[in-house]
Length: 438
Image (cartoon, rainbow, N blue to C red):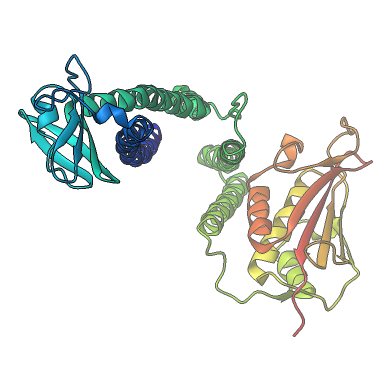
């Protein structure tokens, strides 16, 4: 069931229940008040007749005791009788109804006269009984008229309330329907932010969360596209080299053949390294980075990085924090730093600088800062400024290795920031958290 129908049903049923409860209470109360008012009117009539008789007692003297009259012609809806304590009728309305009021007990009572029910009130005063009566059918007509006057506007208000409720629910959920229409008509490639005009305050967090999700998906898609491009490039280069050197080795002999085979072997080694990088990236994406305990000394990281590094002489190291321990597994820290140095050597015509120092606690705690600086392959063409490696860094400075570095830093609580330097290259700042001292 849709949210609109659920709201309409829940609110509508609650609305109907409340209104019918109020209507029932009002009907019962109004019916009691009408009956009470009519009974009071009946008693007031008897008191009025008693007052008139008390002021004009000569009214009781009649020349025709066999047919005492109070009113002529005969009334169809009311009747009255005055009788003595001995039962003698002194005055009465004409017809059978007046004569049928005899022997009525004092107070209110009901009697059937001529097939109609009558409401009777008898008042005892001095030596007389004064009886007044109303026909119940006429009283019910009056009651129904009064109730009808109450029910008609009540019913109109009830129906109008339901219509306003239906309109209010539809109008209130219109932004949600607009959001639904936007998402339904959107293509799978459209990751632009959703815009709902005058969205209510309750819907704004949903829209903001949805737009945040679209932004993260867009960054992920861009990263995956960049990763696919980098991986294809990383595979294409060694495969092309291996194919070329094998073709040369097939055509030549002697030392030239051995040189071609050696170069093909180097291509295989590079291809193997790329495959290992891909496997490590897959393990990092699955959230199982390493089985070893977190924590590695800076000297151990440098030893692992420089062990089989080509062009070792082109790397100048300035270690200002000997003995410090990084709160990252040794394998991951070594892979991250090795990839940064490989990237710097690849895109540098001069030597590269590796400077290591600590950074005071700020926000997430103290960290070890690894600065990898390259001189670039050409003169700088972009003004200095901070550049995020995952978004606006130079394309030539990106590769499969940097994607792994970004993944490692994200999972280990570190950061990676790139800035252009004055030499035309880039400064890669890798921040890894310090291990807690027990």
